[in-house]
Length: 109
Image (tube, rainbow, N blue to C red; front, side, top):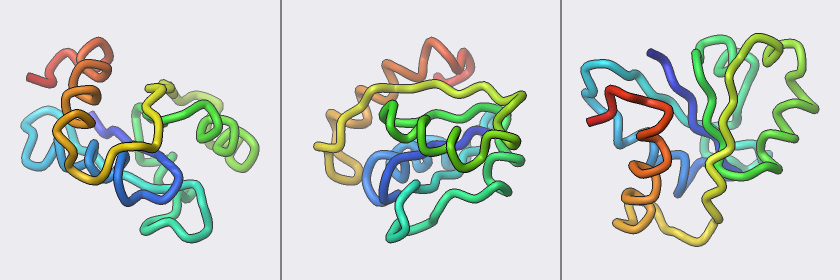
């Protein structure tokens, strides 16, 4: 399954989430950001590639819907509600991601 993680800058939250899936046998992950200065900025191509999209905050979902309404019409999008207060690779962030993703990705373990 192809999953996309989206936050604002693609430097901390979404990039940490993507790294959780490095070499995972069941999931392929990518990440991107919604803001102009993002490390990798989200494109229609990202959304077309993804089977499920996880955003960190409601504002990320709103921005994607504003800019990519057509590309999202048949996509599943989940708002994780993870605030922008954890640095890349933070152990609390990783635990929070694993907890919230477990309900949506049964093969996570």
